[in-house]
Image 1 (cartoon, rainbow, N blue to C red):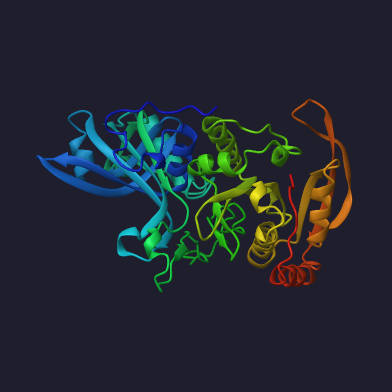
Image 2 (cartoon, rainbow, N blue to C red):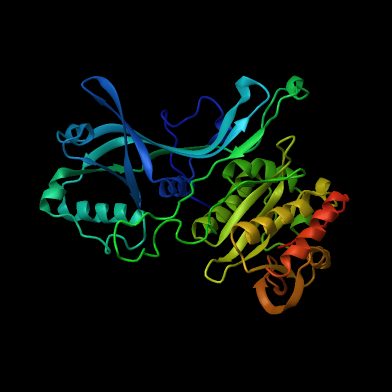
Length: 418
């Protein structure tokens, strides 16, 4: 179970409490993904808000500034009370009424007293970490600050003790009376994209530049007529518990069915940790009309060097079996993998006992490639033989056409794969 930060009067929500989280791993992930933050403090009895850069090192958030700036000057006399905000915008929500327009986002707020970092070694280490955040190894691949530059730069350290995360994910929430209005409604996904580097030197571009590789580990929303795939968050846990409350859905998965919201949050938190390790991107499957959570699915075993990834950890609630949901979800994921990421190969793992899954994967157009014997342990302790299916970029165009035809004809591909 992931550790949580304690709730305080300043971090307890007064509205939309279901969007709040005190999960330590989730807060760390948001702070680490964001490059910039906003620092609020009081100067001469007046509120000030300052945009700046930050980096997290363990349970300390380091804030960058100028020694002559308001933040640095305020901390010279001792610790200064601050509030730090970080927001990642994931989508714009267009509703049929003005009041229900919204945004999908992930955010963190940190309250506490920041201290001026005066120890030279800690200051250099914090600045190294800040530089390495824009590219692993960048601090060693650039000149370190000299004494004058160190003196001109202020670094404040804020302990991560009073921390809350907040997120909204999902679709439009309109009043029932507004559903018949002739206005378009939906979600416009937003994501940060790094463009090609504009070089200012004759030296070759380093491999660590953000965006230098294919965006394999960037979660994006994928939308269709039957299903919308949203980057999975802890906020989906309650919906997943309701949709997947059937032991048969979990029969061939490597995890026992979570029986409580807290247990489901732990399961989701594990998927999120895998995402930040760079080897899995989990999605919530959502009904695009009602916004109801249907299930989950993932990219996993992601290998950007070989341009290969797997699709799996797929579960859909029984009411949506033999519908167009699974067919369209797999089509969306295959289109994104081959046409956007430039994958050379997509593959699937499934239990040798799971005949339904094997038939479903074969109907997607994948080829049965073999069996990995005693590949993984099942929850009951027995060893599972795993069947491997694959699809190559050369096979994808024909497979994609067949899936689109099947979807248009109202056919479906049954579940579950994992």
